[in-house]
Length: 120
Image (tube, rainbow, N blue to C red; front, side, top):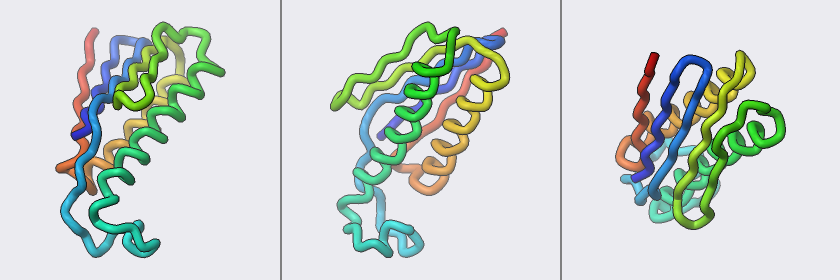
């Protein structure tokens, strides 16, 4: 299972993602079913989607976030950690990533779990 944790402390935001998705139960309404993906591949598709969202955030912050504190990704380990302090643009980038991960979790609850925490 993938666990994605979001923390907010004022303008400081953190995303940590760990783990790998297993193969979820077959669902007839999956878009990937139309392209011929086997049910045994769906866990890999969930991992790929979650990874794309996390890596997109990481790349954006590497290029455009002056307040980037910690930007790490270990390929193959299923680990990603991003911490950045910033304004509305950083908040929007994290919100977009969170929205995408929540959509994955709603569709594949057995493969991805979302946790959030706010500190003040």
